[in-house]
Image (cartoon, rainbow, N blue to C red; front, side, top):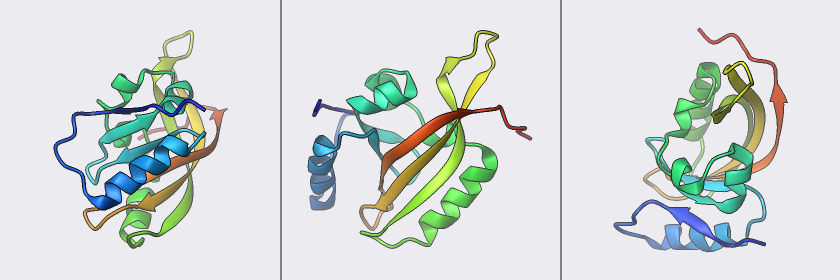
Length: 140
């Protein structure tokens, strides 16, 4: 187990976030802490393998930049319907923003994550349960 967490500079921590950080260290699957505005502020090393990017790259992006637009709207609705300390499983399509096909087109994957709402401000922990490459969807 590689129990290293990559993070943006931390300005404050509350008890719920500290508990989440402790859990992230123990997880052997890719996971990250995402803020209400979709910034990924903590990721584990396993996330680097999944996303084909460094942890430092991953904590500089918004997860919403990679999700299929239809999936993003649906995910936001599920988040709004989920209360603190409750989780839900969600399968969606996303492009791999850091890796391309040989013809420079986007690589698309189907991901299944468990999302847990951590605190009243809407921070959420995303744990990946699996992924597979898919054909490029039509994005309008």
